[in-house]
Image (cartoon, helix red, strand yellow):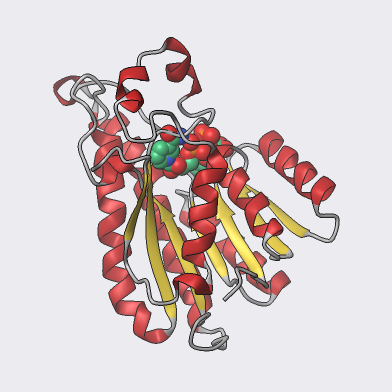
Amino acid sequence: MALRLSGSAFITGAGSGIGKSTALAFARHGVTKLALLDLNRDRLDDTQKLLRSHHPEIDTIILEGDASIESTVQNSIELAASKFERIDYAVNCAGINGPHVPSHELPLNEWQGVLDTNLTSVWLCQKYLIKQMLGQETRGVREGRGSIINVSSMFGRVSPPGVIPITPYATTKHAILGLTKADASTYGPLGIRINAICPGYVDTPMIQPVLQTGMLDPEFKSTPAGRVAMPEEISDAIIFLASPMASFMYGVALPVDGGYSL
Ligand SMILES: NC(=O)c1ccc[n+]([C@@H]2O[C@H](COP(=O)([O-])OP(=O)(O)OC[C@H]3O[C@@H](n4cnc5c(N)ncnc54)[C@H](O)[C@@H]3O)[C@@H](O)[C@H]2O)c1
């Protein structure tokens, strides 16, 4: 089977890094309708400009808003579905690194902030995407009603090193795997495939300031890949997992981490 997609996709965090690269990858593989949600309007405009320059046929909906606010998520998904008639693929990618503060010194509101942005946003998007997809006709056994990819992290599978105190981040990334598996079990039989991806270190604005210090060099130099990932290497795996090429995969936590978690 060739990796040729069609239809529409909804992507959060599409203004930067992995989300932006994923929007471009969907367009490259044949998706012509893209709904892009991000907090940052300028970044979204930049993604749209890039998409249009490479793929003038693309129809985009730009959604500026916070993916952890229920009304924003509901309105965004309903708008995308009404304009595009259905949502075939979705990638819940918006996230933050959060504070680098050990647990005994971490204020509750900062803990809560990371949970809202990284975890509640994924659940909210999943909730409204499932509502939408349940009402869509199936596109057959391999496409189903729709496919959702949640972006976790290698720190959703293994602990961050002790010198990087990002407990709320690691907690949310582990929890994303729980909500992916639970809803994959519930909605798989109804034609909706839900999976997660667990990237290693990726060269994006999220970690570029830390990369520039050289502090992470020993971390990734000791992996089989020996380097950080390019965003495209993560979005290629996302496209595969979303596509009918992965039609027998349900609730997986796919490591794309250069071997970090071996
Ligand atoms: N970069 C890495 O090394 C790495 C590794 C593993 C997992 N990840 C995960 O990949 C995802 C994307 O990260 P990235 O590296 O591309 O980061 P990034 O900072 O380049 O992009 C994240 C985007 O999400 C948006 N965003 C943040 N909070 C939001 C909210 N509440 N609502 C809507 N949009 C919001 C930001 O504006 C930004 O455009 C994150 O979930 C991150 O945890 C990144």
